[in-house]
Image 1 (cartoon, rainbow, N blue to C red):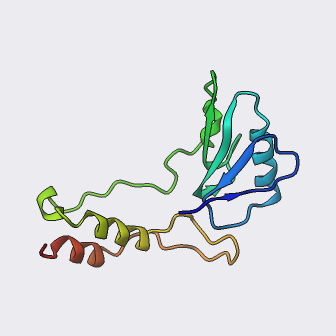
Image 2: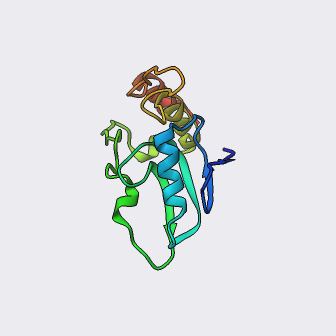
Length: 138
């Protein structure tokens, strides 16, 4: 997946984005502030689910040099994530993991809503689709 170098006035280090949406003025201000941290190592990276947090963007990766900054996780690690127990055993998935991963990525949104349209994404994968892939013969 390609990234884009964001141009944000006043940013000190590069801001690389894998997100496919624009960022609000508040988000840009937060990114500018994070890019100016003296301990920042190389650049700020934004994942596809990046959105406004507290102290830094949720969905951002901020490598530091000789520093640990708890607030850079955006204060909601795991937002929108859940663990789901499935009936699948590891043997049934042999040789099918790529197809399974692609089906899951297709069915589960990487952000809570489309910032351009405001449309909410689906919140769960199609169990039928995932089950069909898992049960396919090799």
